[in-house]
Length: 386
Image (cartoon, rainbow, N blue to C red; front, side):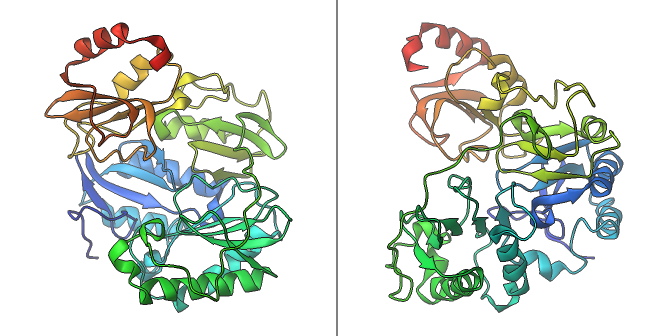
């Protein structure tokens, strides 16, 4: 097996892991955003046997293992392939990912589109590595803020539409088959019109083609999954997007659990779990009042080689102190959150820059703060700004 581990600026996978400060990062894309109970147990075993024992949930609803050694990576891959957690052929991983609205049902438009689009992925031209599709054809779109380049959604009238990311309106389509055909056609247009230079659909300023008129607004956005009981089971949150494998294993231990659905919101839907089966763990809360769930923090140092500061302990310490959103980033890349936050802390040369109402790469209000300096500075701010 050969693999690349030192290149940055692309999304890692399983066949193409990325080197980080604590070893290789290996990412798994759950098919249709769902893993069987047996697959989740296998993933927990893999995290503990080959990695650091932590499982992370990304903003694209992927699961990833950290701390994998280069020597252990081939055995990990054999294990993941055996349990159908990754494709057996490396080239299958190069296809753009499909992000599904997590409450899809068997036979609905979202699931149908996923199956039919998967069958046609080979017809698409090679696309930039970070491009993907959001299949969000429930009554109301729930993935509008999730990263995707082409979207299948519902219009306010109830019909289907295909929308290019960055455009407020989409193209109405008469059926799932028509939607899939248009999505495939749009990938060719994107490449032929110079989209590779932009890298993502939202940055591609070229007008849409006449055969894909953006005339219909999508339906008003729906709500993301609420923590706690759900008609299909129970929804748990992952503070800072990570959970120890042993905690996840306990959460799926009850006999009635059949599968786990992933989301782009650091939440897992455990199918078949019932209230009282397993008490919520501190690492897997099911209460919306948990303030850590409003916070974003990357792994930070020493887990990420590009981070100059630790992030997770500080984020935990700040939990509950700020009313708005909080983003703690180990560097100016801001991997954990692309949107502005009420308070953003960015690592630089081993200290923190403080940004109000912005992103990790925005102009700071204060620079070069140590942790004690930072906490003292926060006490001086007008509470209305936080």
